[in-house]
Image (tube, rainbow, N blue to C red; front, side, top):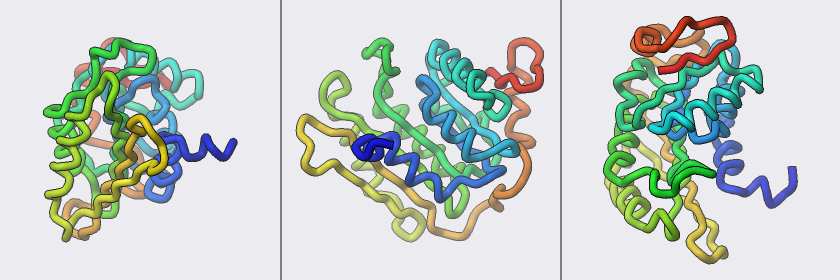
Length: 226
């Protein structure tokens, strides 16, 4: 991999996340987009893992499903066409990792971007789902079409997280101009909470609602859609 590419925000976040995701884990892609993060999570979680991928745009869910099918990973994902602020309605088991890539769908309508209010609610729910020792990553963009409100609102909210339970790492591309993206990692450091799912086979109760609301019959190797 070309050295500069290794430090692009998505690649940088993926390399950080690798340490926290293992075979059989449950993961959440809170912003499916075109499926880049979903594919990464599916590969890391392995055949016995499960990835929930959320996006409010049907086009994004379809793009993600196509990408997973072409990669032979479709059977590892539940694709949910809903806002990420509803993730607790679908995910009922503790997650090893929750991933956000904020902003708008690449190649899509820039007016359809993530919003501060729903993003904070989604991050809050994601942290409630995150297992002890788990990690959340946030790729935060600012300036241009997205403005600064989402970035500033998120950073202010994260500053108030209990340091006895959460470690918040805010990174920056310090010598880049024109509002470079901001990689943020939140690690759950306490040992309380539900048992981890590491090493278990695929999710049990968490997919019940997804299966009930899916369109059409599921065939082997096909992603689940909601």
